[in-house]
Length: 364
Image (cartoon, rainbow, N blue to C red; front, side, top):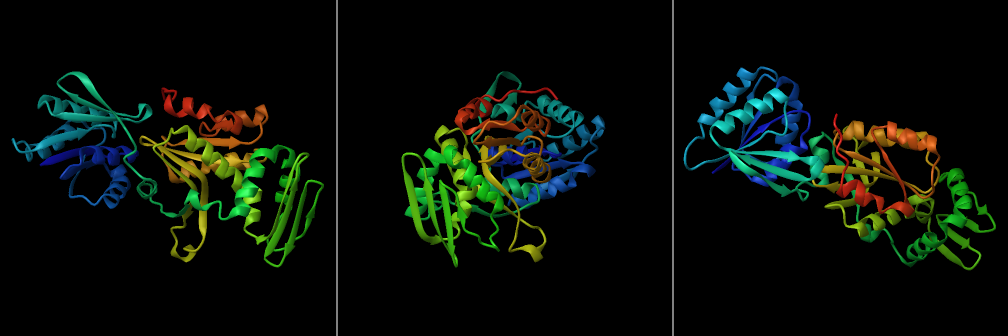
C-alpha cells in the first residue's frame, strides 16, 4: 500500500503532479483555513480515496504534532509512505520535512522551474527525475475552478483546399498584403457585409458566400463562392495556425493546444464563450498561454493576456505574445511590466527554446 502526505496551499498543480508521480492508494491532505478552496479543487479533480487534516499555517508544534498523529496510523512494514513538501508555508514544509527525516521516509519536491521532481531520503545524492507533463489542460482549468468549452483539433483547421491555398499564400506574402488585410479586418462587420476593393485584395460577398482575390507582384490566388467563415481565417486565424505549426516543429512542449475556449460558470451562458486563448502549451507542470497578433500590438491585448493569467491560473503560468511585426520599445516595456509577458516575433520563434527549455530562475 502506498500513502501520499500532501501539504495544501495556493498552488495546486504540484499536488496533482505528485499524485500522478507516486500513484498512491490513499492520500492525506494537510490544509489550513485559507486553503479550503484549493483542497476542494484538488479532491474534486482526483477520483481518489483521501483523508484531510486541518493545521495551523504558522504554528510549528501544531503542524508537527498533527502530521505525526496521522503518520502513526501508517507506520508498518506493509506501507510505503511519501511526503510532498512542495506546498504550504515555510513553517508547514519545514515541520513536515523534519518529521519524515526522523523516520527516514521518502520526501519529494516538485521543482517546477527546472522541470524536475526531487526525491529526498537520509542519504545522498538527491534523486532527480524529469517531469514530463502529468496533467492535461482540462485538469489545469478544473484545478482553478473553470472548464474548457472547446479546443480545436489542429488537423481540422484547414477545412478544404481553399483554406490550404489561402494559408500557403499568406505564409509567403502576408507582409506585402498586410496593410490591406489589416485595414479590411478593422472595418469588417459580420452584420453589415460590404465589398472591399484594393489593388492587392478584393473581397466580394454574395449572401453567406464570399469570393477572395489576393495579389502579389509575382503571383495571385482567387477563391470563389466559399463559406463566409473563411473571413475569420483571413483576419487572423491563419496566423494562429502558423504560430502553432512553428511551435510544434520546435518540439519543446509536452502538450500543445490551439483555440482554447473557456466556458462561463453561469449555466445561462452555456452556449457562449467567456474567453479564448490562441495557443496553450504545457511543459512539465508549467502552463503557457500564448497570444498571436498578425497586426500591431495594442495595450488592450497586453491587458487581456495579463487578465487571463490572473483569473484562470497561478503565478507559475507563463505568458507569451507572438507578433508578425516588430513592435515599438514602449510596448515591449509594457509587456515586461505586465506579469512578465515574453514578446517575440514569428521570425524569432526559435527564442522559445531558450525561454522554455532553459528558463531563467528568479528570486522572488
